Amino acid sequence: MAETTIILSIAAVILIFINYRKTGGHYEGIKKGIKQFVITAPIIMGALLLAGIIEVLIPREFVQNWLSTEAGLKGIVLGTFGGMLLAMGPYAFYPIVASIIVSGAGLGTVISMITGWSLLSLSKFPFEVGFFGMEFTIKKMIYSIPFSLAAGLIGYILEFTILG
Amino acid sequence: MKQSFVIIYGALAILLIIAYFVGGGSIILEGINKSKGIATSSFFMLLASFIIIGQLNVLLTADLIEKWLQVFSGIKAIIVSAIAGGLFPGGPYIYYPFVMSFKDKNLPIYIMISFLFGKHIYDLSRLPMEVGFVGLETAIIRFLITLPIPIIVGLLVQRYPNIITFVSDLKAGERDGRDHHNS
Image (cartoon, rainbow over all chains, first blue to last red; front, top):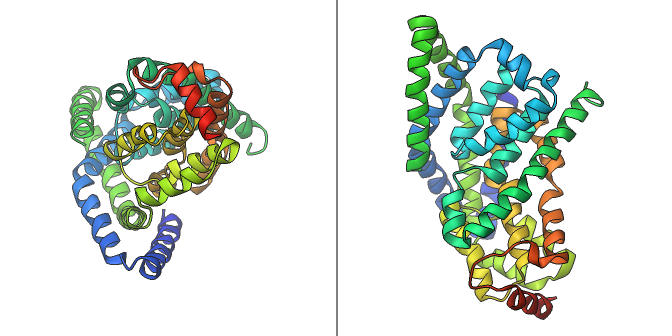
């Protein structure tokens, strides 16, 4: 976490500098970022609490049988549809993924969960139906499922071969 | 935002009840302690992430991205629109109306689709959060594996425009005409 914080802090400083040179709106950027942080803080707090409870509650056998690398395709399918059901923003979603990783989930499961959430999350459903219509939304969901499963499968193969 | 709030705290309430029946107060305390640990260690990471998001919001305006999209066509347009989608700041209230505005500008449907998939897969504003919580290595692997998805989808829709209908008032014939007009 410390390493990531350093990398992100360096990225933030570089972006502030670029913004200062290009638009002069670096203070506005900082203000916008902090305002968004404050607004989303209650959700982040709730998600972190949820992640902590999941971590202690999730049975080891469940992780072993359904989410770990040994779970194979089951983990990828569960990851895809689990990601779809997690109808929430990134501030809430990623702490939950982190708790599942700590519990012992395999790379294929994690990748299919992130991809499933990115493409299929039910939180997007009302917007897509509202703006593009039901037919588009359903078709997009159906077409997205194989991509999420394939991404998880590639992650699973990578974990077994190159990363294993 | 409200929806996420309800889901998170609803799920939390249910899991707290389950935890109480499974392991009593001690398991809840253990969970809270774990959460406190994550919260303490991730505070500065989150702050840096949000400063990055704020800077991107100012740097990458909708006008700038729109200019990029109108310059290219074909495969170049697919790649540029997928990247533009990833760079486009803001949540669903902002990017869905922006994508809808493509229709008025006569941009072909495959550009809209690759932009939308680019936003969902690449989304630069959520990458810092992903790196922070799942780790740099996993985030990079996930990004590289899913990198071709918006481009493949864009190419598929360009090749077979009838596989998806955007809105009821945009018929396939109309859409084909727009595609030819722009490529």
